[in-house]
Image 1 (cartoon, rainbow, N blue to C red):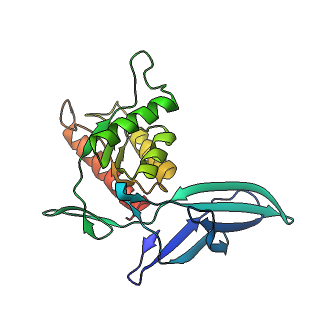
Image 2 (image 1 turned 180 degrees about the vertical axis):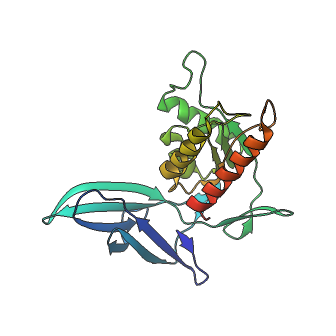
Length: 233
């Protein structure tokens, strides 16, 4: 979604399609009412007076539904929740959400538990979010790897501003640069629609044990350029 100055939002929906058929796109509000619709694999819908995703105060979500029709029959459906918001960072004044100053106070979260490692349950994700909210936090850094999609959904739902990043710490293995590029692409492809995410993190603690600083810096420049190319916002 892109906010416009006249209090409208342009919602672009790009659908990757295998085979033939008619693609129908519907945008529904939180109550399930259709507020915009279009037909095609790459469409832009204009939403008048959008209800903004506004952090912990009002994390409003729409649902975008894409249907594939063949011979008048719906053969596949994909839906995703989306939010309409704008953000910017001022080097002197900090973070701004929807045009207003929005100081960030939060935590860095690892996805693990004693005895379970990374294989934690939804109840444990819920407990982590409950603890983060109890602290009064409004932002989460998801360190240092992909987290469960369920937790990104929770961050959307509760209005957390999120920094998401790839598991790239200090250095890469020999011939490992291609893997960092692949992981960066997957992080963005899989999570592009989450309104909570405002930052793609390319790595962590770059200088702890870096052996080849020139190679490391060059790889980071490539990752940075890739992020801006895939997500111009």
